[in-house]
Length: 142
Image (tube, rainbow, N blue to C red; front, side, top):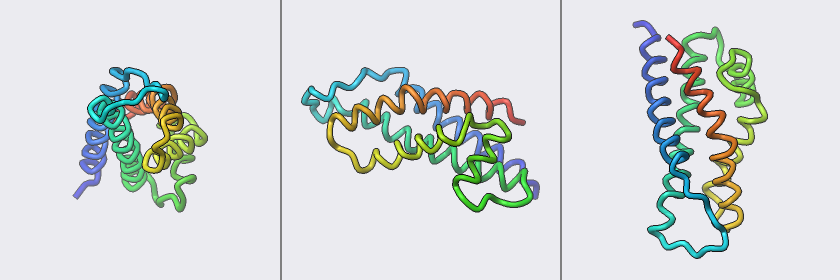
């Protein structure tokens, strides 16, 4: 059995997750940490966070699948995986992705409004830009 269908399936899952994230980013209303949001008013922010988590994890799964299909040996560490992805041009740089992982980790543990504002800004202002670039790069892979 050829492994290329695995790579195609992983890429398609990634692009679907990214499409959902970009819809939330494009509709991002801005978060004011001084406002007392109702649970209903928090839904766009929760969707943004959840979609970011899925897009980030889908990215990592795609990277690992790419590596399994195209490389002789898997990376031993997360850092090595990202360095390999940077070397082949799928990601911009290691530091950006370490910052994106930090955002992912903070989403589950932060509930203070000012910290949430920083998290959402990081998704919209930094991560989405990098992930749009990744979407362009992976769309071109055949």
